[in-house]
Image 1 (cartoon, helix red, strand yellow):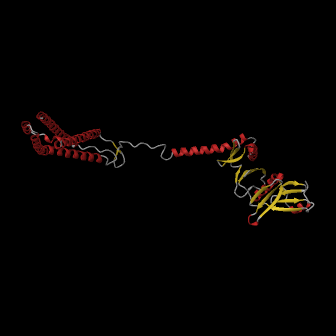
Image 2 (tube, rainbow, N blue to C red; image 1 turned 90 degrees about the vertical axis):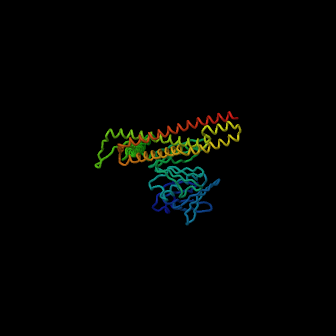
Image 3 (cartoon, rainbow, N blue to C red; image 1 turned 135 degrees about the vertical axis):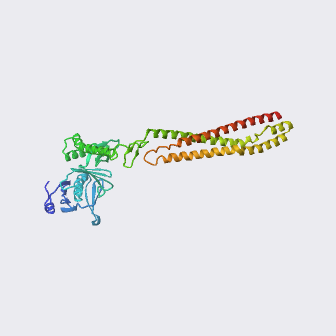
Length: 415
């Protein structure tokens, strides 16, 4: 198709990149910087050329039954429109959109726009180096996304009944492009061909192999980093602290402890535990004795009050004698036996304090210190005293038990 002279004069030094016939003598000519609309001679008009710059910030399309209007928004410079036959809209929009993308520096000068798709509010442009996606009422504006083939590592499809999604993995992140299911295969093949051509690959399998080494290197470096974290300056774990650390001298050397000192330590610990246990037993026994003396066992006395209760045969006399027995027994209970219980408690408390002092002083250095030589004798003396106190408490309890049994027996016979 020859270019009219009026168009050639308007072009100047520019070359026509695309030509779209609009019917009759009318035609659309696209250059890298502008779009020219040529109208031929008619009954009501002469031939004319109108040019539209590609510096537009926004492209909008309005479709009618016979004609479609393309509006180029230049911001503060206003909006310019031109009409094309509705059946020629897609053919005319493709080169115009390519020129606007080039004018906005979205695509490079030598980059070829291969295909343009419009699905409702989605505009998808496939070029020789990238995929440009725009979603919105406008065909294109400055709010768009692009995925350069240099960053793409995978291409896949998630099929659906009505719509499907083309997955373009770029920079390690999957990007989804929703398309009608009946057009998904076509779009996928267009994108795949452009991707393989960009990477000089004959097949998608070859492209996968070429993209795999980078991923493998990244995984290997990640594994090495994890291993370095595990085997860092502190190794793979923390060694347990020894329960019995060795004793060190002033020069930091390990001092070997005498075996006899170790035996003395063990025997001292065992005797200390035994003393604590006996002290607790004596304390419990003293408490029990005090309860018996001040509680129901207050009626433990000699046989005379009980005999008086039996001879009188009246409940009032029994009550008086029992009260007298109680008062007398309280005096007895708070005498020698009470002092004995108190002495037992004091001895037990002293044993606990000394045992605690012995345990705390053993860790003054880095190791255990040997026990004192006279420690075993003191423990044995305290143990003997506590044993004697416990035996006296047991005898007292047995005597009180026998007295209570006799009292109960006589009271039951008096009734």
